[in-house]
Length: 110
Image (cartoon, rainbow, N blue to C red; front, side, top):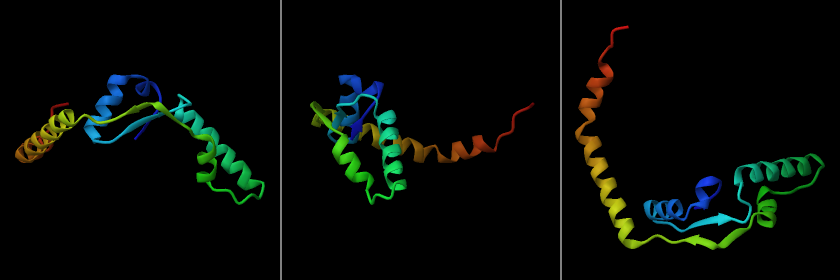
């Protein structure tokens, strides 16, 4: 997972993402990934308009760099907690499916 923007600055938030998704979370050397990505896409579009046969991958491979020191790995104990919570959420949603349908069918006075 590549985390960018404000949330990527928080070690706690990166750890939560790593644990919830059971995946490594990395940040980019450029903090504002969305704006940087838009600029790279503009470069790609401009170069293609100039007649170059260039892929977006070749541009991102050249310019997008991972901040290796900011890599966050999932913690097994936390992963288990989030998996258990997801199982509970799935059971609750299944059990309440009929209640949700009834609720959607209700009308409210205007």
